[in-house]
Amino acid sequence: MRNLDEQTITQAVIARNADTPDARLHEVLTCLVQHLHTFAREVQLTEAEWEKGIEFLTAVGQICSPTRQEFILLSDTLGLSTLVTAQNHKKPAGCTEATVFGPFHVASAPTFELGENISAELEGTPWFVKGTVKGIDGEAIPGAEIEVWQADDAGFYDVQKDGMDHYEGRGVLRADSAGHYHFQTIVPEAYPIPHDGPVGKMLQALNRHPWRPAHLHFMISAPGYERLVTHVFREGGEYLDSDAVFGVRSSLIADWVQHEPGITPYGFESNEPFYTLDFDFVLNKNTH
Image (cartoon, rainbow, N blue to C red; front, side):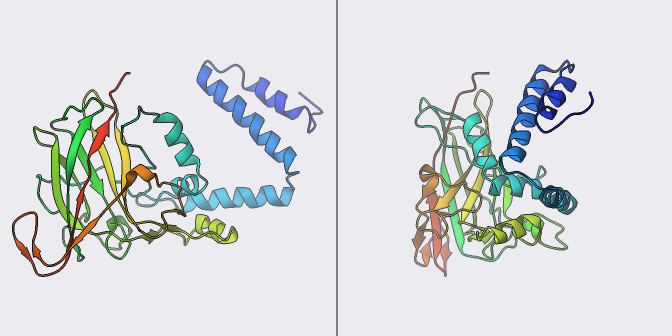
């Protein structure tokens, strides 16, 4: 194909890709090319702007590491993660809503028994978390796998800390025979997403802040049910209405109840204030 111009190039690219045996790949790439080309025409993209865009994406890739996924941050801050999550996790009324996965999950979190403290050596306000994992029909889900991860009271995840040789503030537990779970940790605080890289520069240029409201991550799996990836946010917390990654849902905001020093839910005495959270999760049945 010769003598292509701004009007004919789009169909030429689509035609060149048409011989793939992968029907879904063909559908996705066709739409991608159409939208990219339409975008370039609509904004009358200049060569200098195109070069800046390439430089930006290159920088995003270069800063990625096993403990930092800048492309997830980019997707999150552009709202794409929330869009993909919402359209892929439509659930019946009553199910716990899903939200963004985030960039700080690890695949090798330690296993804990119910009631153990997942915060390891972290300092902070004690927090006692409990609840039940149920199905949409109200049935308890015994043995559900519950993975939890969180920031510390300074707003950092363990994988962000230099020289860390063990995990803190994350773990995997299993619900008991009645679907109940409980564990101890510390109260996490609001934190900024990593903003010392290209995504941070983008937010600064857009006059946007990088902050996320305080939350606790959960990923819950059980045979016969859809996996749930979600957060539980703190009622009254800062940034609930301006979460940098658009992850807040009203149904996921809960009261983190403060208690004066005294007897904890585990029966021992605390000389400092502590918090409790009681939150039930409702999973959708897996129809696939």
